[in-house]
Length: 75
Image (cartoon, rainbow, N blue to C red):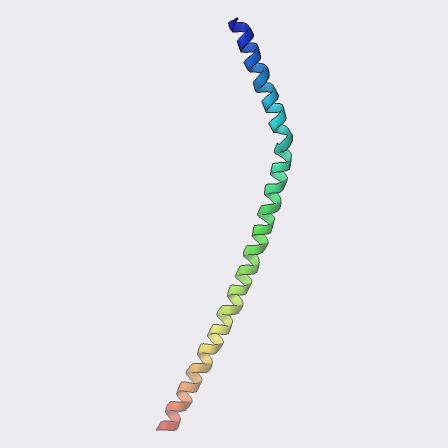
C-alpha cells in the first residue's frame, strides 16, 4: 500500500515536471524578449533625459546672459 502510494506520488511528480518543462523554454524566451525591450526603453529614456538636461543648461545660460545684459543696461 505504501509502495503503491509512493509510486503514484512519484509518477505524478514526474508528469508534473514533464509538463512544466514544456513551458519553460517559452517562458525563458519571453523573459529574454521583455528584458531586451526594457533595455531599449531604458536607453531611450536616458537619451531623452540627456537631451532635456542639455536644453535646460542652454536655457539657464541664455537666462544668465539676459540677466547680465539687463544689469549692464541698468547701470
